[in-house]
Image (tube, rainbow, N blue to C red; front, side, top):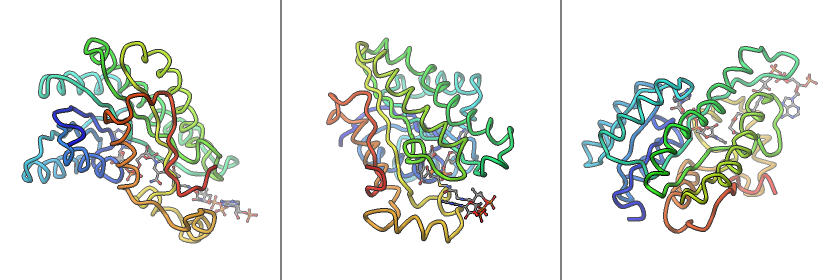
Length: 245
Ligand code: CAA
Ligand code: NAI
């Protein structure tokens, strides 16, 4: 029980990596606020509650500051505190630079950068008052080494690393650890919507020669949320089968 009685907000918790993280955190004793703009998160939360979990779904667009602030107030009312924030919600709108619309560029920035900023700024005052907290941001292999067709997404995920380091410096003295996880190519809807020939080509470039599983990332989130990582701050853990070295 590495997260016994800890309260965790997991954004993008209705699907993929966020849902896997929620299941993992609940297994480790956490109370989970499942945050997503996809209403199916309500069914996922109901299923987990039926299995005995202490979980509540909040339908929120992380790009909306107002909704995020309301969500954090509601989480505090329900659970009394926030120990962990997993800034996992994210989107892609892939396109080659020459064809990428300004709208698709901005949409990715709004969710992947502003969403992380909004959630962190809403939660941090409460962590400062508590004198402790763990914030984990989700970057990507694309933000580290670039990726064809991902101008917007790579920019946003590089920004996540910059924000992580800045907040680690600002908040360390307040007892708050801020770190990032940079997943490689993991089997979720986000990757499975990529053309098959691109995936096959990718696998050849990964030293482990396969895509990652959602549990590979959930385990990294868990480590960075637990006391086992108390002296780790401002770092990015790469969970990518070795595609970036
Ligand atoms: N490396 C080098 N060249 C590439 C390439 C690659 N990975 N992908 C495409 N190209 C080349 C093509 O061969 C093509 O070359 P020519 O013009 O000489 O024929 C040119 O770039 C244009 O490619 P497309 O014909 O595919 O162009 P398109 O406009 O139809 O589609 C695209 C562009 C939408 C970006 C499409 O290629 C695509 O979806 N690519 C996958 C992008 C990708 O990897 N996304 C990752 C999603 S998973 C994720 O984001 C999670 C994470 O954090 C990693
Ligand atoms: P996914 O598409 O399966 O899940 C993303 C979740 O975020 C969805 O439930 C979606 O509804 C939610 N979401 C998107 N925009 C939102 C918003 N504005 N407000 C609230 N919720 C929103 O994707 P996946 O793979 O689970 O991705 C999770 C995170 O991991 C993302 O930040 C992604 O960029 C990142 N990542 C994923 C990789 C992969 O290979 N799957 C690789 C590297 C990073």
